[in-house]
Length: 466
Image (cartoon, rainbow, N blue to C red; front, side, top):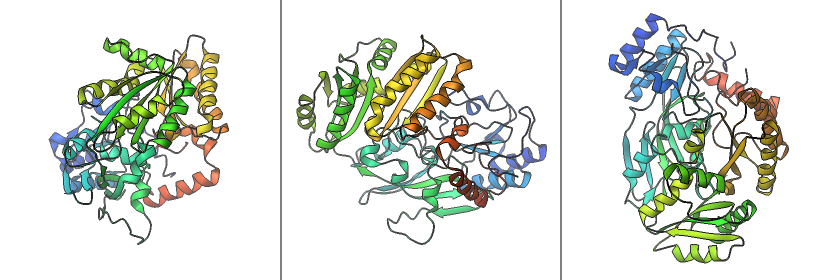
């Protein structure tokens, strides 16, 4: 059996009654959901991908219960899909066949906060917003922030190696993880929560789990490194007369203002869409804007204001240090994905390209989108200093989406980029993997998968092409 694609099962086929009984015994009757109507919230993700009605949901409340669920699934050859906040956009946390959706939402503990060193242990179901609230006022914070912070979980960000808005200063999630506890495909608990900065005692299994999308083990807790949280925070929305000027401005701010840790590119179309939905006006004119945030004691306002004044192409700026106004400016970035998603018939691209190819990428993808349908629109935003663009196309006919995805992927790879910057591969992008990774590369990854999950039970159908 290919461990990357478990034996096929009809979408309508129910689990064996013996497996259901064993699962119920493992987590309790109230924590096993078999009714398709009750389980729907776990069976559909943000992209609209839906799991078959035959999938059941297990909600373990302890690491021991997680281990018992996995051991039960291994004994009955039942595939398992782990799910955190279910905010994914590539179908990675939604099974394509009956099995078990293992939700981590009851694993919500926060322990062992070391205020001197800046480290905390969080169970995998803790949301980023909950983590932020726990750390508030301590002088420390987590280095990863996402627009989906109210639902995105610690375990999910590790499994997807999420990036977010602060990567160019603090790195991706992998860089924030000092240790982890996880359950392997046989139901064994492996504890690597020690968190030592130097530990060369063999393979770094924790790092391997980061970005594995639930295919190598079930993360139940993590020891997280924290970053300093200065008191002074300034947020600015800066308008530019061209997209190119905004891109250049982002790199200048990154280089010249050490306190800047966010420089998010937002096209004028995205600003106007969010403003329209929220009944507001766009705070700054121009063809594009940067959402900029700087942190420094006691107040980074002067640094940011001086840097903005020196940037070419600036059309205006809204700058704030008070929390309500800062939150209002942030909403112009945070609400884009939801606002574009509500337009319907959406084709999302999460690409990473060399910094020198950002403008060529935007222009090229715009041309490809227009070539499929003259009425289609491209919505541009992203983490420009991380080489990461989110390019969302609307108005493309459903029968043309797959062709457009193939064309954009080929175009981006030809520029030296990748089709998956931070959203992962999941199920919806796995057909593109052979166009980016070599056969030998994929063979080695398959070998790792087979070594730790020989039965192919953990997230079958994710990452690897069929």
